[in-house]
Image (cartoon, rainbow over all chains, first blue to last red; front, side):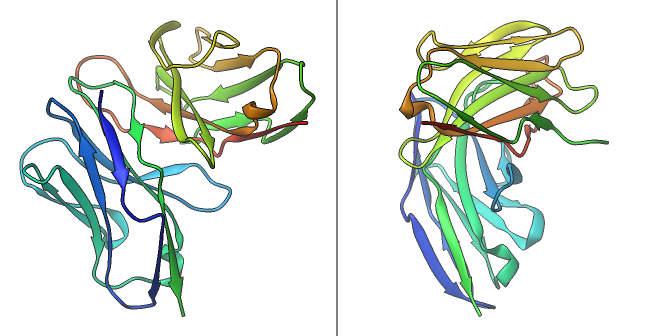
Length: 114
Length: 115
């Protein structure tokens, strides 16, 4: 069975600084990879996804992630964060062929400090 | 398009009672998935319905059940509530069907508190 590990439960960062949220997965087969964001009292919103092809994936709100098969990682990055990026971020995997359940990591709480 | 709607948004129940949560997917979406979110266990998959049939099921006891109607609206039911069932229950809808990966759109959730 696949699993997802988000290495940091909380990441504080100053406004306009870069940030990296780490995600490692475990699976014996190829997976699809996702990053979701959850703002307070809201559901999850998809930031970006990797299905195949280019290992560098660009998403919404200036976020990007790089798929590294050898390290089984899918780290999320943003070069300059804003106060509005304060939220919980979840990494998730699912198995091909599609429409299979998402398996989530425990989440990383990003706090942007003014 | 209207987003995924979940009702009610907040619910307080007593141990031993049962509860029904409702989810209305985005128009045209035929797949509805349910997830439980707790501080300890994180986000866990409950089940998924597609065209009124349960297509996938997570590892939850039989007290948790669901169904989907012909208009794709879905309900989940929890019987004999336990304190540990206190959680945010999230519903997600997608177009579904085929072998493609479709984006799942999440509702705001129903916050269930069991006392």
